[in-house]
Amino acid sequence: MNLFDVYSRYQVEPISGSGCWITDKSGERYLDLYGGHAVISIGHSHPRFVEAITEQVGKLAFYSNSIVNPLGEELAKKLGEISGYDGYALFLCNSGAEAIENALKLASFKTQGKRVIAFDRAFHGRTSLAVAATNNQKIGAPINRTHHVTHLPLNDIGRFEEAVGDGTNFAAVLLEGVQGIGGIYEPKTEFLQSVAEICRKNNIPLILDEIQSGYGRTGKFFAHQHHGIRPDLITVAKGMGNGFPIGGVLISPEFTPEYGMLGTTFGGSHLACAAGLAVIDVLNDEKLLENSAEVGATLIDKLTNVPGIQNVRGRGLMIGIDFEEDSSSLRRRLLFDHHIFVGSATDKRTLRLLPPLSLSMEEAETFLDRLQHELQATNR
Ligand SMILES: Cc1ncc(COP(=O)(O)O)c(C=O)c1O
Image 1 (cartoon, helix red, strand yellow):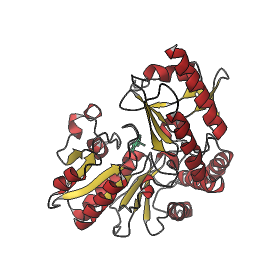
Image 2: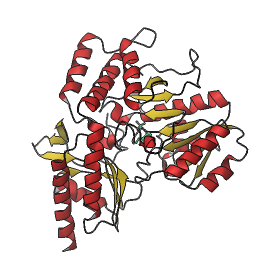
Image 3: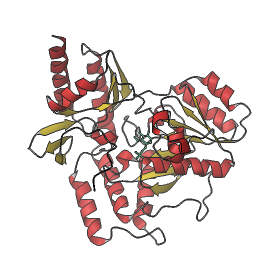
Image 4: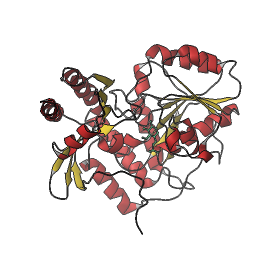
């Protein structure tokens, strides 16, 4: 049997990683400024992460959600503390798309409504409702198409108000803390605050998708915390497990749980919780949110002055760099000639940086040097 061939792959075969570096099978080291789609938060194979998982797998990897699991309770408590959402409850699942499905389902259970407002350039995942809310026709199959979702331009409050109208039949409003795959576009503070207020007035649950922008990536635990709003539901995944598959929904006390309303076999397993707990401990102990804010701000500032770059957007270690032309070949050259992983975006002129939150200033300088060399060489 072969793998079902749905991924375009670079011919690189990493076999180990440490911090912001990965090593391929020939011993070549690469600086990872992409974190495997924003997943690596505390660094590749962080010793405390490895130790926590190793110890837990030796004790008990998994049992179903029909028993008491103090690790899940501890994870909810610590996540509440680090995020400032102490009073919220946590539903654990296995991926970002699953977190979105559950958040939308919860919202619809509560309101009994069906309509969803999402935004142009949004990405929320590839499963049923998540892909319907994603603004990319190419990745939705006919069976995923539903007339429940309306996509609106980000930061256009007039269009938003008009679309909400009298607020009837809504399940939710869904948006990313910072649009990731769309190219690092941030909702403006005024827009977000007005959206939150209109949602509150009309009893429409506001869901913030922090799957890519959360867990300290922008320098605060959640990107929306830069804008002074408190959503009803918040989805997390990616950085939550530093590579161990785990996702979750943070749920406001306005939602009342009922047995059986949500569920998953694997979600919240002992092993996943051990991974999730190690991530939070390291974020705290190594002050990685502060590091993300500081190194990110300096990197953004320096990138702005690099000749050949058109525009730089972002916060913390979630950065979009625009070039005049398609940057796919630059990305290849950075990988194969300079041994640096960077990401792409829907618009091929944009490169995305999503490194581990432990990126040092020295590592950022290494990237800047190699990027400038490459840009100078191509412009010569
Ligand atoms: C903002 C956002 N939401 C949802 C998802 C889907 O997450 P997953 O691939 O874990 O299903 C992604 C993945 O890239 C994402 O960036």
